[in-house]
Image (cartoon, rainbow, N blue to C red; front, side):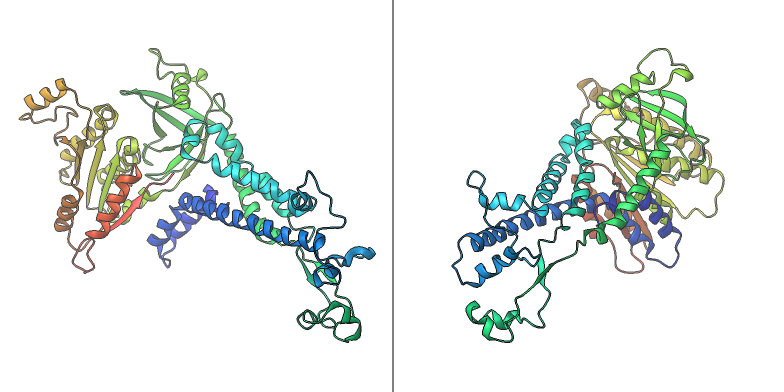
Length: 514
């Protein structure tokens, strides 16, 4: 019932918007829970697999007991009597193993189990579940996406056979307990039942009604609506207005779509039908809501992104004519944790590598609001930390930082944005010499920015202590996009350095989830 709901992106986005505008709800805490939808989906999958295995093992023991009762129980015993109830052609049986038990290659128990609807449908359900689960590993998702996509859509077969799994009514219950007391009669020999008024009437059994549909019909309807929305969006016209080539194998797609409305920090799913009709890839929007287009920055790091860059002319010397650009489909936009930065007085943005993309949109939007003198802007200070493994990731984003640095200085707001770039590795001997020679220069040797690049990894404990000291009595939102290892460190420091007093700084951790 639950596992379909977290993957209904539009449903989650709808609830997130409702929570955000509801002044009487625990908005921050509920939004943080909605941002964990995929983690919840994965944990539900683990639980379903564990309980399914338990369910199967229990039925193995159950059918072995029923088979032994039909084949090996002594004449006159209760097990033999109950197993033979259907011999007169009535439908009052309780033991689904029917006489004479047919043995297929000596596997009588398995053969008897597969003769029932619950048996063969259970096998199909289990196989579909295992294929979905094993093909959902990160390696297969990233390297063989079509395999993941196709096997994950076995959920259609899974739910279909789940609905018929209990229709035969193998689990049965006694219908005449008022005239045949099962507790009393169990302690009397079957031979003596005809002489006891409480047991004289034979027990009758009826099948239980299938109940799966009561639980899964609602989520299936919601998921069908979700897929219908995606299908409609996939056929809406999206115009690529410009393709911008950036250094380090990064290109920018600027697009327009009728009725498209976005917020800073949101993301979209992008599909290029000429490359694949199955693959939808998530990309964070790097444009601002104040711009007349929406854009994504894409780094060519795989087969699909490489093919898209070639199709869009990002690798050729001459730009491709607008009419020759490939058709793309857009689903979204969808909200993430980053859009909540405007709810805090202090924003702390931490990016690792290409995880910097959500903050491009946010920084642009902040700048537009400052330039227009937006009095409703709650933010008073933004700390930006960017940890890069090598210098190749610097170019395109450092251009944006350089522009913001100049324009904010002209507005007299140089102290509003405090940015720190950390180069963790990847500098050559030549670059090291240039860094040393230009150390006294006003601009950084690598980025060209006024604030110098740090070399090595940030000491987060000291950083959080300093921010807490500089911002007493405020709520500071910590926003991160990057690998889980660094996420744990930031989350731990956010909790460690949050003050419980009114005059202390309180950190609220938020992580991007795609």
